[in-house]
Structures are given as C-alpha cells and as structure tokens.
Length: 124
Image 1 (cartoon, rainbow, N blue to C red):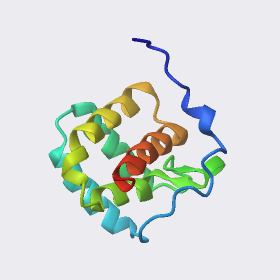
Image 2: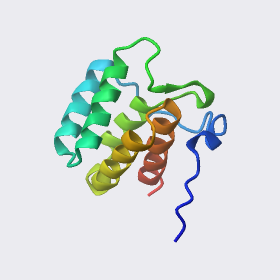
Image 3: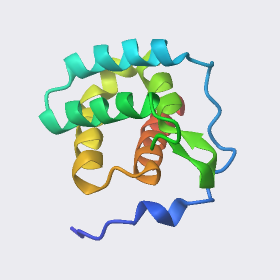
Image 4: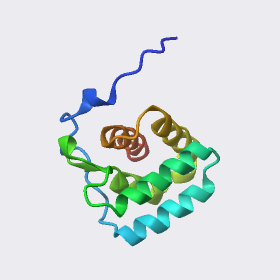
C-alpha cells in the first residue's frame, strides 16, 4: 500500500464548472446545518474544522471559496448534508474533515475534499 498523497493543488483550475449547488443556502442556513453536523461528528479535529468553516462564513475573503475552481466548500458541504445519503457517508465525512484539519485548511484542501465526497454522494 502506498502512502503517496496527491497534493490537492494538483486540481487547482481543473474542477472549474463541475460543481453546481442543488440550491443556494443562506449563511444562516449553513451555520445551522454545520452546527447540527458538528454535534454528530466524533472526532474533535473534525469538529474544529467545522468551527473554522463557520468562522470563514463570517469573514470577507474567508477561506471557504477557492477562486481557481470557482467553488465554495460551504456550498458543497451544505449539499452533502442535505443529501438523502448523508447518514451513509457521515463516518467518511468525519474522517475527511479530520484530515482536512490536520493536513491543510486552505480553500483548495477544503473544496477538493468536499467535492470528492459530494461526487460520491451524487453519483449513486
């Protein structure tokens, strides 16, 4: 088994136009959804990553939006939470949020990880 990770920045500019949110969520809706998710997560690092995402909702130029791919990880996460398959992927989401916290919290990392989960959920 290889421990070679693909740098998330490999995908910068290559995912543009691929993600379209199912609907537009307000910041308040996202905050409520993310707080609810946080209560279901088991890993403290995952919970802290959600706190960071919530914080970035409130900051102009926050780190949720990745310009290279025109993606906002908060839109992607809101779609994942709203999915009928959400319960099936909660442990995967917990793991990926933990990795996101530990391996890099940049917009590219957040968007690429959330997009991979979103793709798995919506390609069922």
